[in-house]
Structures are given as structure tokens and as C-alpha cells.
Image (cartoon, rainbow, N blue to C red; front, side):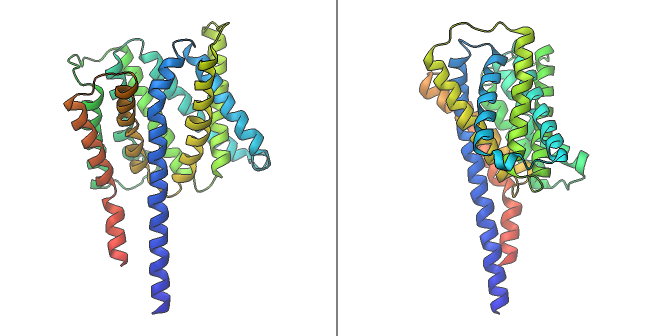
Length: 306
């Protein structure tokens, strides 16, 4: 009896850790939601890849300084896997940024957000992970929510060159989430986050040297934005992702991350006074419903263990 009771307590403790980590991922979405407003202000002064290089180099430097003892333990396989994830992350950023020049912002936001529905299928295709009705249903529900949130008022949905690039961005984002979830239990979060961030920084730096003009005067207020985004939205956020995905499945992670669009829309409304329509509100509701639906399997396990 005592043994069964201890086992039950242990299961409840594990579930509490899972919920805590999912709340941490929700915090990441909240932080990333603020980046829409802040990055828009910074990009008024900085070229795209110069901005990414500054943000990710600073984030990598901070991680290196405070985690050198752990990072020196990085094994070759861990560096290769983490760097591959970083390359996927940078490619997603690049496709999104270039695609934005050839399509509307609303279509770009929606198509890039399709990684939500791609994640469970990518996990099945590459790692033969089981597809559940909850995962598929919540992913498609989130897609509808993203459509309403990102494309409110949009009437032209004919694909263009920029739309194809946005679609590639979604594919690379989905693969990055799946790989992080796959190897999060095998690589220390700090090591996993650092090499991803460093690869994005290096790739962004090489790109800006190749195609962009480096600005000569940058206001101090812009640097404060870059520093905040480097510390909170990059170093902190990626550490949380690598840690939290140890106990959070890919589909749930993707749906929680899709709430970034909700927080972004709210901050844009509050700070930039951009419109927030009834359709957008309904889209937000669908995204929250998708997150709840994605948890049903966990709830079933919790009930069955009692």
C-alpha cells in the first residue's frame, strides 16, 4: 500500500513538472510576442541580418561567459547535432525575412505559422512517432486560428514567390522543434542552446557582410532593444525551450509557440495601436482551444494513474 501510494505521488510530481515546463514554454511565447513590436522598432535602423547577427552574437557571448565550464564538456556529436538545429533555425529566419519582401505581412505570418500542423507529421515521417487524433486535431485547429489571426481582411491567397519561401520557413521551423524535442534529453540544455545560437549568429554575420551595408550610426535606444532581445528573447528563451522540451511533446510545443502570434497581436494593439478585429479574437480563442485539446492525452494518463 505504501509502495503504491509513493508511486502515485511520484506520478503526480512528474505531471506537475510537465505542467510547469509547459507554462515555461508559454512564457517563451509571451516573450517572443513582444519581439514583433520591439524588432519592428529596431529594424527601422538596422538591416535584417545585421540585427540578427548582433542579437545572436551577444546572446552567444553571454552564454559562453557564464557557462564556459559546461560548454567545454561539449562532445563532437552534441556540437554537430546542435549546430544542425541552429542551421535549420537560421534558414527558417532567412526564408521568412526574404519572403516578406515578396508577399504581404499577413500571408507571411500565416504561412510561416503552419509549422504547427507540420510538427506531428515531421515527427512521424523522420522518427516514426505515433500520430494521435488529439495531435492532428489540435494542429489543424491551431492552423485555422492562425489564419483568422494573421489574415484578417486578407482576400488574395494566390501563392507567390514569397509565399513559397514562407512555406519553406515553416518546414525548417518544424524540423528544428522536432529535433530539439528528440535530443533534449540527451544533450544538456546549455550546450544545446549555445551551439544553435552561435550558428545563427555566424550565419547571420556572414550574410550581412555579403549583402548588407553596415550602419554607421545606431541610436542608444536601439541598442537597448537589441540587448533585451538577446538576453530575454534569445539566451533565456532558447534555454527554456531546450529544458522544457525534455518533458513536452513536439505537437504541444508547437501549439504553445503558436500563441506567440496572439501575444504579438495584443502587444501590437496596445503599443502600436494596430487593429484587433473580432475575427482575430476568434482566432486567438481557437489557438487556446487547440492548446487545451493537445493536453487531453496527458489528462487521460493522469486519470488512469489515479
